[in-house]
Image (cartoon, rainbow, N blue to C red; front, side):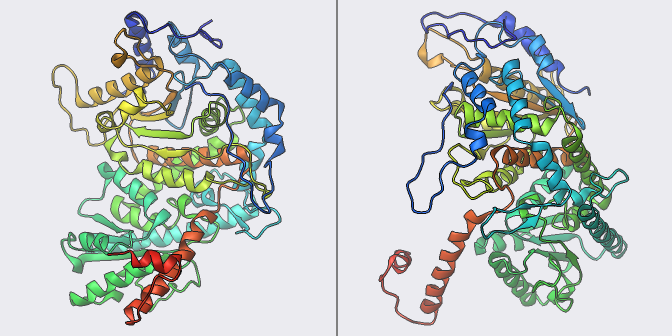
Length: 586
């Protein structure tokens, strides 16, 4: 019965009992999975009464028989807290593996019936056809019948540069061929830099996807950085960001500046570029001898008179999906070496192949991760997801995933322009363990909200520096905490002292690898890109635009116009909500 849907209620909180025997065997089973050396009913977003609001969203979601099956199963989800709920057999059966990563989901609130229904949901929503359309370069970034970006989405083509192609479509091959040409430019540039020895540091200027993804990958692979090289990043338009970074560069004369803006008109990036150029001039250096750029062909930045070198990207590359395009290539090749960058691309490409060609949802790692996320979000009614890497190298990886997921799937209309009546993207957050255990894990274990968790962990450390202290190494202590937290969140613990009670049933899964090397980083990056895309396909939303950022930009421009008046000596009075708010600035 423990392998079916267990619907037993929790024991009353009156006596203390121990699960020590069962937990010890479960712990061994989870440990063996490492690679060698709230039960709330379904909820929906509230309907807002507004002019021109087309209600209902995708009827195939709300009225689908498979959706109703999942709603029924969610009324009594699998209880992880009863004795023998998590057995070695369950752990062995509830896992899947691809490209060196293993996902163990025995600690999720799913039973075989639930997993089967989720797989039927994937087929019902046509996710494989949608994924193929994306990879083939069909126009999938669009809202039918409304003004929109109306673009292809071809970040997968940026790593489709190996012998076994992901797609044979004309659009995909053309994009891949263009990227090969740019990669050849990067490789030659890296050779020139190695031979000249002129530059030791690089300053990247970019924001959003031009910062978060490249920064996360660069920080994540410090064990593979190129000797004698260091990358610095300025992203925030806050002048203190640029000041702190510039003042910590050891030798400005040996520093390259790489400015990244696809449009060539991103205000924060252009402002920071001018600030840095001014800094170089004041230090007696000619910016033209230090600045390179990544931009779109023909953009305002595509100006050989201003830049040593220009690398190009097209509009079918969204910022949050751009790490493996020219946005990431020059910086990561400079800091990690071109060969390591190509290993990153290889890992991402292999995960692309797996996501597109593995037709069984139970074996398709990103799709299964997406489906369980939808189960937690839509059917258990849980609005957040914590991504907790037990790897200090992934310090900024969750920040990248936050943008990747929330900018992609934080949408309230479907692809036909109708306001949905079901929940879409969750709130993504997290920090590395074990530090987080001394911070917010208290709320995860005993707070009043249930928070699903995705744990990331690796058997080996990157640098290999470790020591046996009291019988175990630091890496073993790290992984012991990782496994313990997964089980503790799932099983909980009953105690006669209410302050020591842990309700359990905190759904979570483990994503495990042997070592975080460049290949594995590429696999992990693409895993989450495809998880996000699959969830967008399931919800029938456009995961590839970001209209939600536009209103703030428009209002910011209006505030800037008021500041220009202030700077010109004009008196500004609180005559409307904009001037009134600006006048409140000290």
